Image (cartoon, rainbow, N blue to C red; front, top):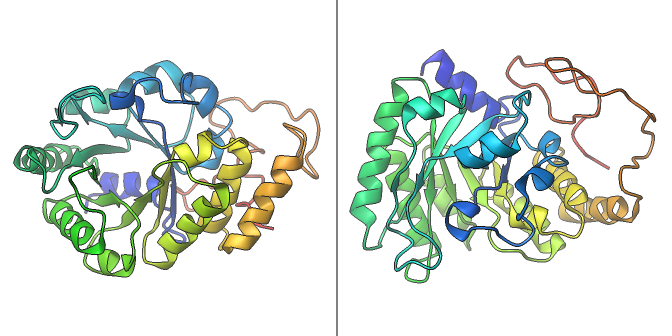
Amino acid sequence: MDWGLQNRIAGIINPQNNRALMLAVDHGYFLGPTEKLENPTKVIAPLLKYCDSLMLTRGVQRACVPAATRTPMVLRVSGGSSIIGEDLSQEDITVSIQDALRLNASALAMSIFVGSKYEHQTIVNLGKLVGDAQQYGIPVLAVTAVGKELGKDARYLSLACRIAAEQGAHIVKTYYCENFEKVADSCPVPIIVAGGKKIPERDALELTYNSIKGGAVGVDMGRNIWQSEHPVAMIRAVRSIVHGNSDVERAYEMYKKLSSERPGKRPGAKPNIPRPIPNTPDPGNPRPEINTGSTSAGSPPDTI
């Protein structure tokens, strides 16, 4: 594996513990202004320093993410259908490799719809994308989409994940299910579990814990973070499981404790910390600098 490819993957999956916390904000590519994601800039800003990577579209990246950020971008490159259209599975590649390079993408993400009317089209597109991206050392994340007509059990998800890996995907995003261990065991590349629709906070934390216990390297969570009443508290609680090895109860207690605090107030935090200039360590950023093998000067991953 080329150095550049390894370096990009290391920005998404921490090589020190083989864990990943991805924040998903790409929902608008087919849903439009999703509830509580109407203003992506305001949603992303307070959460960015707590995730390892951000999954988004090129439009949101250009318009809503500061160019000085050091957070890796996982760029959604497939689309073409909307929630009001006839078939969401009719997706194609919508972003060129050249534009992905201009955006300094750390990975390219696209969906495959195994078992749908457009199965052939999306799987072939994945294979072509992997080949094109490989020339520039860019990893590909395959999303195993589910829908009304598609399964969500271990047998179906194992099939979809294995097909994605066989086509060359470097990471696969899928869903948690009963007997998830069978899905993870049959996929030779890292699996990240989707957060899915909004569920109670404790349930989302349990989903995170069970996913990692079942063999996933982490989660790609969106609605269960930014649709929470306390998004920062929620992402920190999720992070405590992913990177701090917290159990569900400990993480949920963290969520409740952080939710009860005044906004912007952290126990033991020093007041009036000046904002760092770009390319200098951020004392308030708990996300470790994993590309160099060192950690940022400041708070360790959330644990209590």
